[in-house]
Image (cartoon, rainbow, N blue to C red; front, side, top):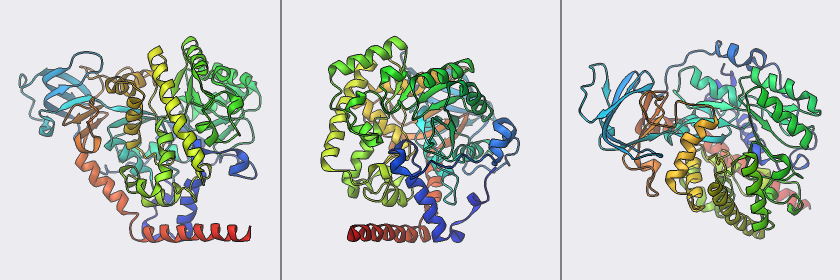
Length: 535
């Protein structure tokens, strides 16, 4: 169900409501929690149990979601993508073929013009002469909280516009983001993306986020897993303050329930200690003793001790234990954009979201606390870390270690949709061929999610596709210029229609919201000046 607040319109949102919602984005950016002492003086309040989603659980809650009209034009049922080239990642391409989609699946693939489409089928002429490939999967996103800003539809639209039809949400800080995103799809407002999720954060007290599952004793693991399954989670987010016995128990309980485990290697442990089945952000790759303090930024940049010997250890542990890695390389790129904030705020990533993101949430002095006032020498450390991360990812790829492409949306200059293409570019900079990284973001990711009928363009497969003017496996390919349409669950949406819908969403934040952003930025600046004057 959509909350009453989320139905508010621009005209009746007060400045104070706007401030609370925007500053919530500043202080509740999941993977950017510096440390408990930096974020808050006391633990987060326990998660609220009175929401319909938490009370009923995913299945029963789904029955309560009201139907919405589709917010953009779509082509459903039966349609043909005529005379296209299928860009396969694992075998030679199929050239000059017609792809016939019926009721969400690829019904047939025939030589171009060999089969007369039935009268009820739509022939999507814009596809003619172009390419068709598997749609992308983002393996680490965070949907926005359900607030007066009503950002959910915009995030989902941007995801689809960039050819992504499946996502794995890696944690919902306040418990409202996941139900809001699910509701947009379940209600029929949007055909996708399909959302797999972890929902809450499993960590030892004190909790960093209100939507946390307190985990003090290994014997609690089965109960936590049962609660997550009730809420529809298929993944478990192993988070901070956990020791090895609790991680081991959590992995065992998740495995028994058929759930995957992803998460942070906790501060003080190494990759070889935690052995998380899917480690995020390359945490734990640097020797624990080399991290200067318990702070997310230091865990990102303190990589000078990651020498060849350390890299070889990580490689061996990953290969021997079958550990997957989701590097989110683009988060480091986004942090480096803070150094060039004046330029970055006018670039496509910043333009993908309302201006208050680049003006406030991603401001280098007032924005996300973990990344405020970064010193020049730390930007230099970050650049050196990026080089070492690229080397490590390259070596892991060569070893056959499972790599997953994820983005960590809402971190500085990490916007939904476009960030996955920056991750593809980062993998290319790490020396991984584009064809291989696209395979990792399609067939390999689908397998990790237990999806056996997507990630390939074959007869009988679910139609999760991108339709493009040129070959997406080439470095020169541009999602903004070359994507013609996205097909999600067999529903085709043109890039042009997605652009119109995105434009309408962004237009809501002009006018009064623009004025609010200016006022809030001025307020933050004056507070900072006052603190400095007093000190």
